[in-house]
Image 1: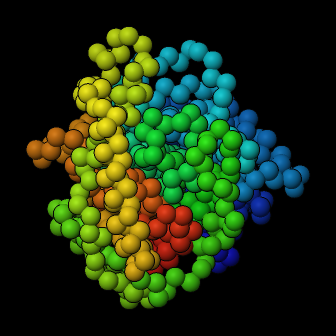
Image 2: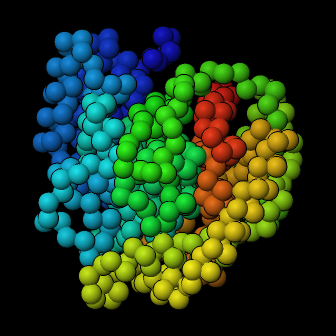
Amino acid sequence: MAHPDKELPTDPAAMTAVELVTAYSSGTLSPVEATRSVLDAITERDGALNAYCLVDPERALVQAKESEARWHSGHVQGLLDGVPISIKDIFLTEGWPTRRGSTSIEADVPWPLDSPVTARLREDGMVFLGKTTTPELAWKAVTDSPLTGVTRNPADPSKTSGGSSGGSAAAVAAGMGPVSVGTDGGGSVRIPASFCGIVGFKPTHGRIPLYPASPFGPLAHAGPMTRTVEDAALLMDILALPDPRDPTALAPPLTTFRGQLQRDVRGLTVAYSATLGYVEVDPEVASVVEAAVTRLGEAGLRVLHADPGFRDPLEAFEQMWAAGAATMLSKFPEGSRDRVDPGLGEIWDRGRELSAVDYLDARAVAAEVGIVMGAFHTAHDVLITPTVPIPAFEAGHDVPPGSGLRSWPEWTPFTYPFNLTQQPAISIPVGTTSDGLPVGMQIVGPRHSDDLVLALARFAELVLAE
């Protein structure tokens, strides 16, 4: 799987998933050795970062030993058999509590089910390290909660890791597991990927089956969080398999995502929109992304400067978000309103005031943006933007201190429009600010073009590494 001329890292915790499988196949490393190395990294580093809310070394080593036996016998179970993985504490996982960052969800009850995500990972033979932190009910774009406290950024622990999949991003970036899976309802895979300097992919809505159904409904996606695009594609080949519990899931892919990575994308038309026509971008972020786009043009992509042409759909997104939060919280025990994250409580209150007409009006705005993007993609194969217009800010705050902003979507305007449209979008690292904070570039494709987005991201990854 790995390039034959590439020397593998000596520390298993620094290896990608592809490198680990290559080492398992050659017999130079075992899943047990890799798992122990990653568990040691968690012990050493997570005290400063707080990326994990649950770590189960005993269970992980049992799974690693089972994988080791399969590799020795020549009967490997899946594509990433024996690769350690962390799982965002939103996905049901048999035998582990799924508390979603909330003190209102009890741990000491039976947890007999796997979600589709964890079921596919388990069937593939991956090693479950533990569960990663999330803000309460994954409601915001930073990661802190009344249950688990503040999660921090490996690039600078005084800064936020982003969210809501901030625990997963921090774990992958810090070598505490090569891959993870997060959720994305408004940017929650891509934002922390950008802030922490990793790859985060939100596929087309329904490409990865979900269960239970998310109250955020048409906004809700799951997606891989990795150090390389190739690892993300391999995880997609696992996660995109069908599950009968999701009636909105798409049909199984006809080809493999990893198999499409090598397609020739040179000559494709790329629209670069630095602001979407209305976003104010930090000058350093703008400069880093502009430089990356320039190099892609020099490498063979046809780059045009073009804005899609839709207006900021912030109000529609916030209405749909509040309605989803209120739906979920309405099922919580009496008195929960006084215990939840104060910001989430405000969203709950707003959602309870919305009518069905308000919700459908917001859905209509989402449809309008989708129509605009559909027409845009008839002339432009993909759209490139910054992932987030700012670098990571001080941890423990919902919005950048001193910014005057009232809500988290206001500082991440490049991500939530493409939850409204349900398009595939990926964030890849393209550089850092002068303070060493990672900067991400977002690539957005038409609905159902997940393979194209991954292939173009892989091309960009290779060009920018030269």
